[in-house]
Image (cartoon, rainbow, N blue to C red; front, side, top):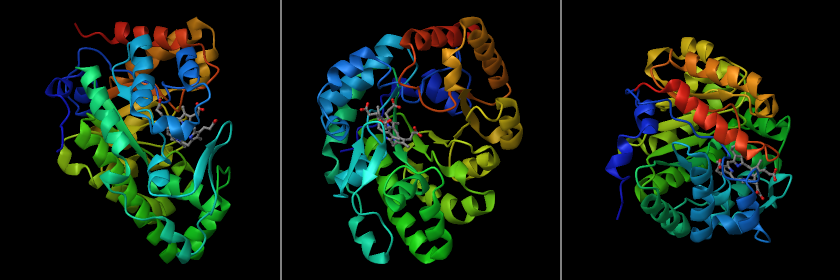
Amino acid sequence: MPTPAPPSTRQSDLVRAARRESVTRTPVWFMRQAGRSLPEYRAVREGIPMLESCMRPDLVTEITLQPVRRHGVDAAIFFSDIVVPLKAIGVDLDIVPGVGPVVARPIRSAADLDQLVPLTPQHVPFVTEAVQQLVRELGDIPLIGFAGAPFTLASYLVEGGPSKNHEKTKALMHGDPGLWDALCARLAQISGEFLRVQAQAGASAVQLFDSWAGALSRADYAARAMPHSAVALGAVADLDVPRIHFGVGTGELLALMGQAGAEVVGVDYRVSLTDAVERLGPTYAVQGNLDPALLFAPWDVLERRVREIVEEGRLAPGHIFNLGHGVLPSVDPDVLTRVTELVHECSSRR
Ligand code: CP3
């Protein structure tokens, strides 16, 4: 039985900002807020491989809550990984520390597609259980569910691991568009269902991570990636959860990422929020966009930049403060707490 998100989270600043409604102050969370920057994370992960930790509901719950307790952020992001649904359907892969996802049998031919069977909720009971447990613990604080977008997942599957230039991925996309689209159609079902499982278990918002979409031209994104992301986002269109669509280096793609079926478009630090709002128009809320490296700068420099971003965010019909990409493991977590407090203080509408 679906357990919809608690009604109180519908009135949270995060969900209201995503819906372009008035807020009491700018909501803030950080991509990768749960993770190696926190000593309490390193302590509970000690000796437990990443993928195993994602499949243990008690551990997922604890790790997801850690940054909420510590920083007072406005949302929790579900602790998992974009490759978890692939692992769950039986794809032979691992997350190698310091490297990222590594795939045993990369996808290069039509026969390789057999690895990708449709995802069902029965493949990921540990996700449903962890989300339900988290929603109970979080009360009024919204939980954000997420999935990887088909293009970014395809890049890992085709390359066999992380890639700088995505050369095998692009060779397949252009050399065999039929196989490419068949691959991405399967991934769109998997991503969409992974989002749906989380939303039906009580997540209040979802984010689709197309981290590597910025490697594509606008024409290639429109023809070969966006339609598949639209299918993934469409899988939760009926569930009344705002959808955030994020990528890195996607300044040229922002409008298309909105049109793919999002309420909120994630902006990395390469494009100012002012420019992003101009490119997006009044239809979308924005999320972003502090450069994660600035968390290492002197406080006065960082403070000025945070205040600027909050001000620029007022130009948008809705703004969720975040980093332009994930928290770096070596950051001082106290700085994240201070940034959270600063965003709240300088955006307070009361
Ligand atoms: O706090 C959060 O943001 C929630 C958890 C989360 C993780 N991965 C946990 C994780 C989220 C949202 C992701 C998404 C993810 N995973 C993306 C998209 C976001 C992005 O950063 O662009 C991508 C590309 C991946 C693939 C992946 N998984 C990479 C590149 C790595 C890093 C490998 C390394 O060791 O440097 C992972 C592993 C991973 N996923 C870690 C965490 C906390 C680190 C593993 C560890 O702590 O041992």
